[in-house]
Length: 134
Image (cartoon, rainbow, N blue to C red; front, side, top):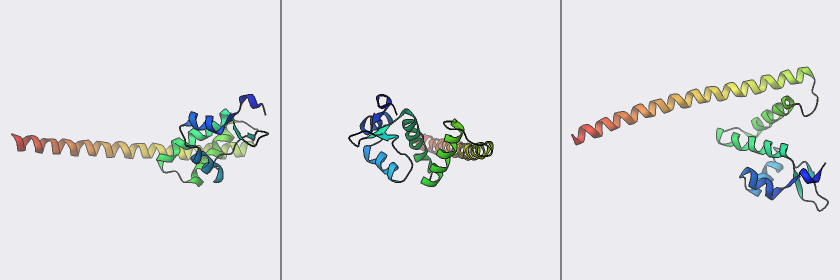
């Protein structure tokens, strides 16, 4: 590994806007692992590790369980082609990512519907307030 292209934990935390403790917790739960350690024992991360942490950060507010995160991260790694994978594994990964994409598209549709209903309700309340003043 080329250490000049590696980052220590503090730099990764700054780049991802994640607390050091959170990154360590992700390491403990197996969601992320440093690519290497320095001779002094410091965790060293690569751009790929940062990208993985940013993906995890995006998944958190969406209610992904750690197991679902691991599953999606594994599938995306297979699709990104960092290492050769058999065609069957690639097809399975593509199907998994597609299922997650569909679930997120469904969630977007539900949220848009909820937003529309909220806007309609707000308009109704606004009309009631206007009539009450008028």
